[in-house]
Image 1: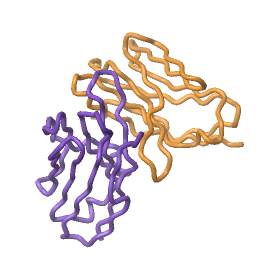
Image 2: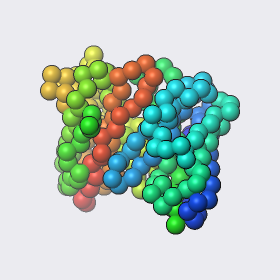
Image 3: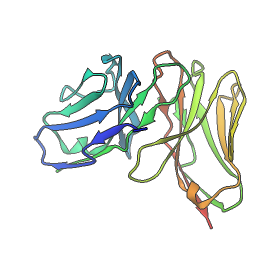
Image 4: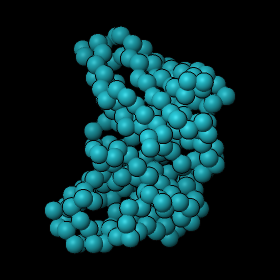
Length: 114
Length: 112
């Protein structure tokens, strides 16, 4: 059974460039979450989708960040333009949608903005 | 305002002994609590959970205890093994949207 798949695993780019992170949730899961992990702030929720619809994007730090979920099997997190302070590990997680069930995480994308 | 706190950033335990990781929360609306384990360069892996209607849940070497009046939960690992060395996150949920609030993590080191 495939887990949550994220790509790329590592991304190094120069500031000002557009960055796109990708996530394929577990089949049958109808909720998807994007997180960012930094030393200073730990694991913080950026945005959450339910049935492909964004439900809560209050964690998205700035307008430079955007996320989409065009279908049940794919989501993107885009940063444009990127800045050095965006450097972090970005995780995607999916969830069945029932109460009292765990979220399942991908292995993350380590993003470095030079 | 940290709603979920893990006050010990690290813990060192001898192999075979008990590891106790602690977590405190402030939001009384939380009703579902989870522990995740994280190895370097991997995503968090679900370990064990507990609903607020229970005060204990056990799965093999792992037991989670919930004290609602104190807003405190703990994870016990018995016996500890070197492979348990990882960062442990507690998380809490309290709404139908299943959003999780995470603690800052505790790094557990189990020495052979």
